[in-house]
Image 1 (tube, rainbow, N blue to C red):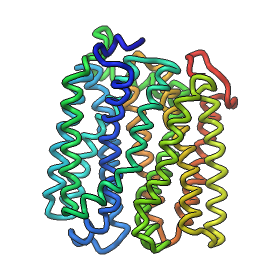
Image 2 (tube, rainbow, N blue to C red; image 1 turned 90 degrees about the vertical axis):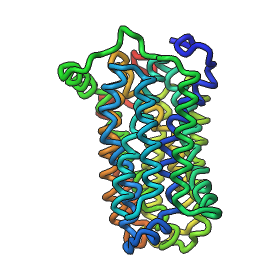
Image 3 (cartoon, rainbow, N blue to C red; image 1 turned 60 degrees about the vertical axis):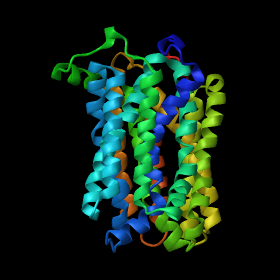
Image 4 (cartoon, rainbow, N blue to C red; image 1 turned 45 degrees about the vertical axis):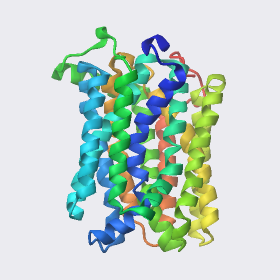
Length: 408
């Protein structure tokens, strides 16, 4: 498949559009981080750990809705479904902006996550409609470069908004961004789903797609691995502000160090895009997973010994996020290798499992925050080790090797 599947739009613009669609979700998470303290103060939340629900509620909504978007996308096509998702996101963002209580904000954040779920499912499905194999992995990696570059800027953007306006304006900005992405898609992107691949909404088809997705060894193994590494990442997101405020007592440096950490993910996407065609997804992602585990063990040992500092923490986290970036795009591509004929449903099922499972893991890690970084670092180490087990199982005990689908 090639650019004829999106006529009138070159490869670069296609990648940028997919990245913008994915960034809608990333902004909904990371732009909130510097605002958690003010949100808690403004809505009467006294316990710091409870403020983590601003993030968790969004992720839970995001995870729960993905299976529905996949079914709708396979029946009605990609364009109409993505417009519904972005519409829900815009309305929910404005609802968040006017929420009068913490409980009301949490409900609105769940709905906002429900809308954001469509951006993830549709992005993966559209890419799979147009590309396959290593070409698909390259598109996903380049998209991740922009998408994962968002965390570098999003907290600073949130902080900038709060310098001139209340925290509620952050949600207005999110609504405006999603609306702009919808206009762009409506103007430039044709329907990418082949009419022959449209699937009627029927329980038999849904169960059939689920059976294919959940019995494919690569799909199951790599989805489980993604769940675990996403969970460790969400544990970091949930407790990151508290780490800088309560552990290192440097809230003013939060956006700077967070940007440095997130920059590791963006750098990984650049490296992966350049190397994946030469080295293959398996070699890159498997080496990255082993390095991730080693770094997590080192940081856990340093934290346990009480020797961590803010800059040491930031440097190790940046290296771990570099590994994270090398894993996620490749894990996602490999999990979809044999599922092109049910791409929409497969992406939604995998997204449902990895996001909800990751959210639960993130809640456990975040809610165990005790004024130190020990729970966080142990969470990384345990999740990395379990993810390695899932990958070894998916590959039948053989790491780094090529396979017949083309993403070697």
